[in-house]
Length: 251
Ligand code: 3PY
Ligand code: MG
Image 1 (tube, rainbow, N blue to C red):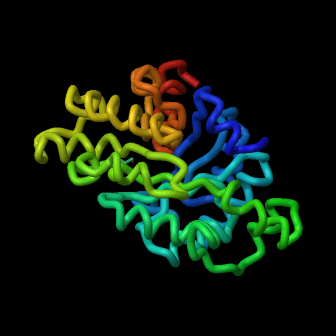
Image 2: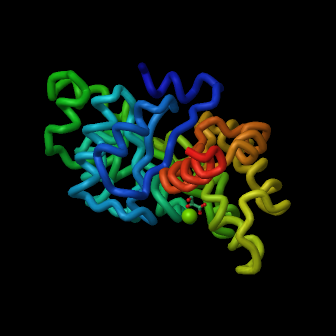
């Protein structure tokens, strides 16, 4: 699958979102039918030593690895790309400077200054090192998280940063920011207004619009606003709901 073409084809791309470490679980989720698996290295409990094993299990199942890095830091972004993440999501991108630093860390020259090294990514691509380098800026996609008032104020300028591939809304943080700390509500009225605008800005700049959703109801509301790259369900919720359903059925 050509991920860049797939992410721009306008159809929903739904992925699971993992915070629990473990390659077995990652492989199972990758085979469970969604389009990809995200590793949450910001708020999940996954360290780099587990993340690379989980990435290998996801790739072995034929799915792309999406990594939400701990922070917009060139070392962390480089490691996530080296263990063969196809998509980087960076939290709290609040300015043009943050977005430029993100692209600089994630793309090779001439777009950025990604450092060469590590071979998991070359092996996972099935290409020679030279061909991996040739295609890397196209095949490794970078999303800037929009989840603060500052980011919202600057979203047009952030979206215009060359080399960025998408905007990814963190609707929990966004709702906290827009309510000045009063509310955690991924579907708040203020969120929906802001998210409609963010999706329009993304479209105007030919960027993919993504967001953390987490439930079928939220997926359909964000889908209606123009979001196609959606975190659909978390590992924690799969376990919690699985237990609840099993108990109801008396299994
Ligand atoms: C948010 O909603 O703030 C996120 O970062 C996604 O989990
Ligand atoms: Mg967040």
